[in-house]
Length: 243
Image (cartoon, rainbow, N blue to C red; front, side, top):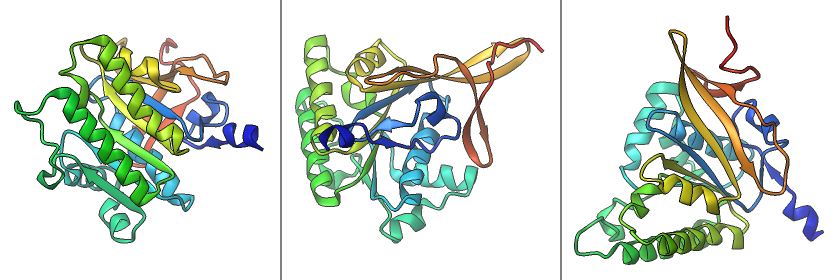
């Protein structure tokens, strides 16, 4: 029975990506989506949460660098997704660590490690309170950029990822590509999906590939990532095919 639970898959909500993952993420794992600014990381995470809501799950979104109303406004105007309505119905819970009431404001008076310890306690308490099936953190680099020691950074990342694994929560964490921080975060994750942009001829093409998925094989291809009014989807074609 334990083996069956460990192997339970969780759909990503991204059409075409579950195929690449051979069924989706594993339940109770920490999964990373990395890419440069503007590659679609926040859209990816939002669709991951919407998939959970559609399946009747409890979902939580933790925002580290901006207020939740920014994402709410962006998703409403771009895709017509009514996140405010979902919050009102109790289907979605936002946690804004920029909210002064949470006392996690980035400040010169707060040592970076202490800030992250406070963040960890906040995440633990919110998970105990909300008991979510899925958690989306957007984005993790805001918490770790000031950590100079790679050893300490690895330890803190593992500590946060461990929260989700111990509580059997499936987490999706976004990280930007900067100062090699993304590589440190990716190393500790159970899976890594990479988003990118390529200039193919005169066209700008979005791309996606699965860098790793512990405990499972994957489709080892770079594929086209399409973002339309309906959201994000993976196309079963290479961005490098000449036309």
